[in-house]
Image (cartoon, rainbow, N blue to C red; front, top):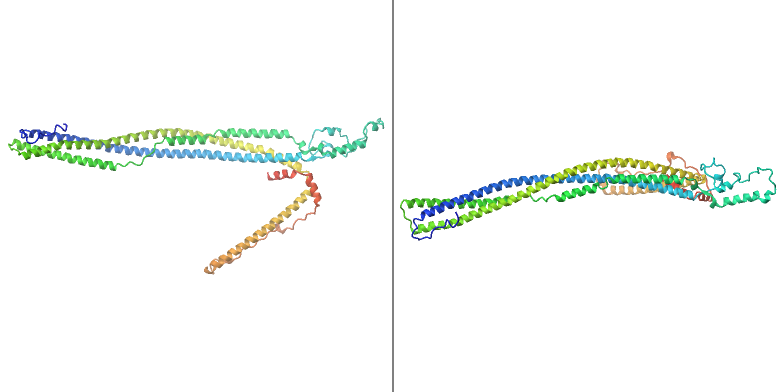
Length: 503
């Protein structure tokens, strides 16, 4: 029944009494419509309550899944960091090897350069090939021309038929000896220590080491993109996650809905009261009672108020329905969030499989790299052996005078170290004595005498001496010109020796 249907006839019309039946019908229809609206509102309220329960359940599920996703992403980030850390450790070991190789190579190059600057007198390699300290070497052209004895004297003429005039036509023995001496004086024609080194073998060794180093780069390159790829996947999943809103507060909505329901209940109660009054008026009318004009105006006035009450009830239903619709939209959004998180969890499962493969591959690469790196360290041993060999080879030219001079320098340096150490210890003892005196002056008077008796003990004094008070070794005096001459003869060797000793 529409609002126009329940309007009453105007007061004071000739047919006022018969219209009581119409007023009763209007009151009854208004009550029925109000009851239906209240039933609809109650149904909507129940639906809203169930929707709230569903929303809370979905919200809890979303938050649990979101926390699970974040935990998995943190774990994945730790895996990426672990892979990166393992790679960094491997790269650090490789860099250490590169540094060590550079040191060995530079040291060997320094020794070879030093060998190239050290001339070898011809007598060292022309007297006897078998007894040469440099091993078997092919003779040079000068050596082929050198037919003298190890001491530079001409060999005897094997042909007794040679005429004395041959000495006139050919070079005389003295001229030939002078020529040989001039060759010995011309050091530019001498061989150097580097001439007895197999440089081709060294180059082959360095090429083999470089090839092995490139193979190690290929092994490490198998997992070089793993950390970055894993972090990119993690970031993509993190971006795809919906933002979790603050926990939903339904208190205000429930309060507004309760207020609306209370108002509707009051309206329904007024409709029921009006209908009851109209039924009583109908019974009185049927009993023959006549109503006054004031009575009819009151009943008509109540009937005119019915449409407004119905409108307010309808507005209440629409208000509750609006709350219900908002809750349904929230539920739909929560369901979408659940589906999104389920897809993300599926992606995480796939990412977990990928991470497992990455870890297994990283582990395999780590094992292979360490094995290869161990092989590379073994490859450096020949460089160290060559360095030691050529350093020792050059150092064999050193004379005892340099060794004795070195020992003297060592003794003087040791004495300076001892003197400096004693001075430093004395300074420390004096500083400690002052600090203890300051402490005693500030706090000693407040400390009972029987507490910490050793607090007034002065600091220990120290001394440094030789082992078991052995006397200092006695070294002979060496003339400076002899030391300078020896240093000139071994010019450049000390650099290689120092590098060898540092290795």
